[in-house]
Each structure stands twice: as structure tokens, then as C-alpha cells.
Amino acid sequence: MAGLTQAASSPSVTYLIRRACARDAAAMSAIDGRVSLTAWSEGQFRAACAESSDLQQHREYALVAEHDEQVQGFVVCQVVFDELSILNVAVSPAKQRQGIARALLNQVLATAPTGVLRCLLDVRESNVAARALYRKMGFDEDGLRRNYYTRPEGREDAVLMSLQVPDRDSKGI
Image (cartoon, rainbow, N blue to C red; front, side, top):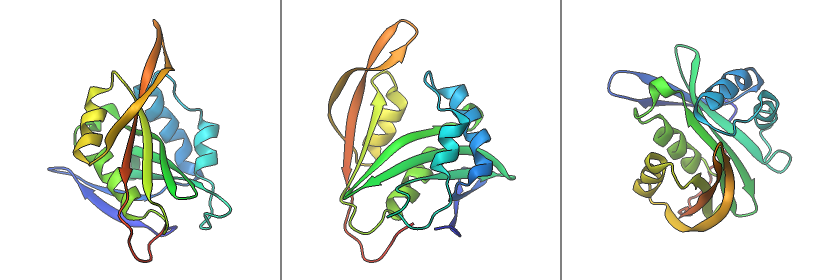
């Protein structure tokens, strides 16, 4: 997937979806800082962007959506055995509700390594828009992780969601 380039379109703009690299970490961190109460550091994103095409050596990876060479959104994933976990997904506030998150997630699912059977994620209970997107994509709500997220006024539950990934012939990142 090092050479992956996939176009995703909103009504008037085409985004390039590609494997994230270390130079994307600052932009990813900036986006996360604008949309998340518990944003990741630039170093955490840099680790997820480490260059490796061998998932046996590096099971965490990230994709970015860019327009005019500017990162507008990202998804960070981790593969463990037959499960693909979505660790973080975010889109720049000015670009939200344009299909970027859906395109990123669709690309993750389409390029999931052979043998992945299930995709997992958790989302803040209050993030109604994200939960609706995940349900539209076929994710089921499996349960709650109580008091998982921090908030300025206390704690918040995480909604656990999963999607069965159809078995496909040779694919991979």
C-alpha cells in the first residue's frame, strides 16, 4: 500500500487517500487537536505513520485524505490477528460532512489484510454524528465501556461497535 492512491469525492472536491507518512504527523495532530477532547500527540501519529509494508513487523498504520497537498482527514488502524481496530479517525472541522470519513473507512475496509474478519471501534456516546455514520456503514453497537473517555465535566462512556468484514481474495495494505 505504500503506493496507494485512491480518489474520494465530495460534491465539488476530489480528495486523494493514501498511506500516511511521518511528514503527515503534524497535520494529523493539528486536526485531532481541533476535534478531540483527548487529542493524540504528534509523536503518537508519527509512530502510526512509520514506513513498513510488512504488517508482521508493523501492525499499526494510517491513511490520510488530502486536497491540494493539505491533509484534511485521517484514520489510524491496528491489526491484531483477525481483527482490525480503528484507533482514531478525524476530519478537519471545515471539511466535515463531505464524505471524507466514510471514504477513509471504506478504504481501510477495502484494503484490510487477508484474514481480517472483524473491524472494531469505540466512539464517545455523545458523538451522535459518528455513531450514525458507523451504523450506516453496517457497524453494530455491541455494548458500552463505562467512563472510558475524559471530559471537562467528568467521564463519558464509549460505545463499542463492530462490523463483520467479508472474506475476500488477496488484498492488503
